[in-house]
Image 1 (cartoon, rainbow, N blue to C red):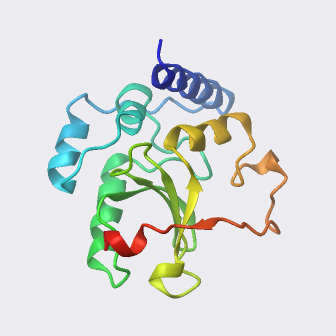
Image 2 (cartoon, rainbow, N blue to C red; image 1 turned 60 degrees about the vertical axis):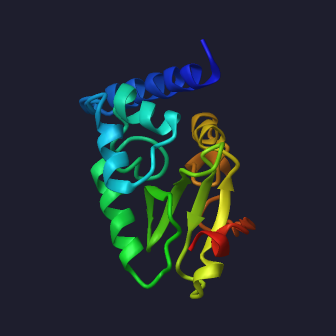
Length: 174
């Protein structure tokens, strides 16, 4: 079993336990062809781990913060942001809504599926982007082990001042 398979199993286990603990039904995974349909709409493919989360685990509404966005919602947010005045970078798909306009996004054009944090509150588009995690796998591991800044038990809390690295790739991607 490779690293992606192991991570998908860990996420599936956590999702099953969380759903059972809260008396919620498990979300249904998407059909296997849905990531290819999404790629046709978006103009880029989903990273394999993200596609696997949607087609094998069924993560809509479960996961970090308020949960991963359902794929149709991610696509709609991407299209909306690309049409906005924010000069949204090509290939950067919102995957989780942290509220107040802040999104966790996967850079679908990076080799590692880097996770970026979009926070429009600083004002200028080039200041809105920072690196949240080196990879989607690392971002998910932070959720699984409770060490990520967005986890309640991480010690970060509301007063935590994130010192994230600005995303240098912004200018070349808009």
